[in-house]
Image (tube, rainbow, N blue to C red):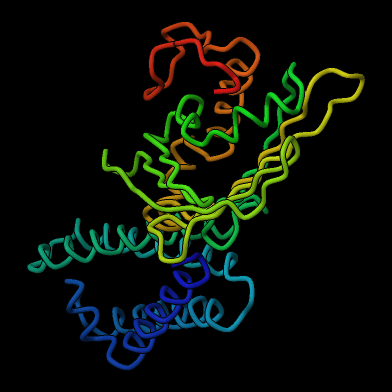
Length: 293
């Protein structure tokens, strides 16, 4: 499910809730553990109008991000109101606490969606599009030869556990996933011009939607090879997982940039030369690797 689909579901939920708050405000207030008097009903109807306005706009307009942020602001207001109600002398504190927990959870989901929906062109529609480049002091043929051996990719991409070449341009990938679990998928090469470009993509129905292109261009002044990488993938956990990863600074562009630095070390020296304290979790101990292996 991509960002647009997730936003639509949020819009449908919010619209339905808003209608209920308008039609039966007393019942909704009572479910939330709030008094269902005249003042409370009026507040609930006002919240309903806000829900319908922001959620309806998500459903009908092409750019949901501003209205997702409107929902986040509304969630903050709702949390504050429920917090006040929870602190008051009420016989329904258990209901109010439950409602407060639910609204906080919904607010967190709205925040993640708003962050994701406001992302740059490198992260659109719930997928990550990453573009990075590096110059290596080797000829294009040497850089191409190392990358072309997919089974060596985990040497400089520590998030990959293994890549098994199956033949016929197909390969089986295994990567580290959420909560310490592994995810696996099959891919196929769709373009391969020796010393120039390699492109691949996951097969239909794969757990991870993934595609990548690597181009090898002679650097100006005979300074080696420019390696340009473009990856696009839908990570495990969907768009929410991608946004949460960004919040914790595990962004795909940072990851690929680090991978390319390891690639540069291997293709230039035949081994990974890093201080032990700077090694990320995952890489095998440094061993010589022939670029043409």
